[in-house]
Length: 254
Image 1 (spheres, one colour):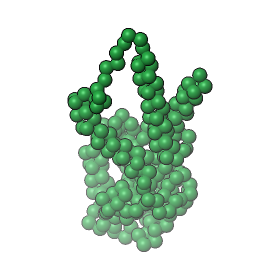
Image 2: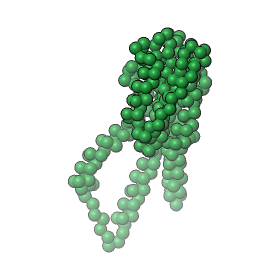
Image 3: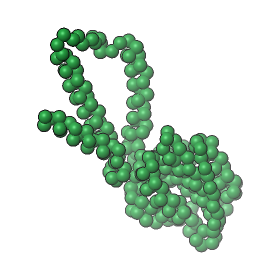
Image 4: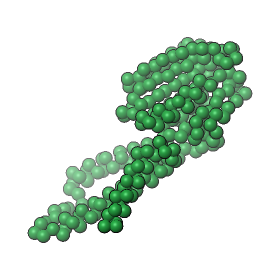
């Protein structure tokens, strides 16, 4: 009986960690450990059920010497690698991001070489190697506290106008984000030296809310963009979105 209660309590703990890891502000490693723990508990339960089956009187327990029928092996060989790729892409790869420098909530970043400044809002943000989230064309990249949130800064050069760059970004988002709804607001920067184009697009991916945002500014004839991406379940998405909007709106020329 004690072991049974221990099994139930551990399953409750692991399920809570997996379901509310981000809401509790826990490290992403807790999600992985909670998932592995839950799988282990169900493997133990599966063994208990098989022992119970074998103990039945006047009943035969049918099974294959190889463990599965041929068509079950075929299904395993096809779906097994797919599941492993999903685990790697959604769980392991985000955990292995190489973080270069961490930032405090509200910390101001000053980029004198490009004439830009902005504030990092929220805990858990860090700079990462260029190419982590982009194709390598970004000037700098920032990884957020969730599994799938980041900021990128791009230099669009002097051949784009503010209107052309913002329009191309919106078209790009509409092309890949299902049911996207985009809004754009333009206003003067703090020092009144540039017009800021502030874009926000909301949609869904795999049933979860997705938000993409961009702030465009012009510095000495060149167009710069702070691009943000956020995708997660409803509660952590809503909490992280507020801070990301603050960061996006703080993007301005020096």
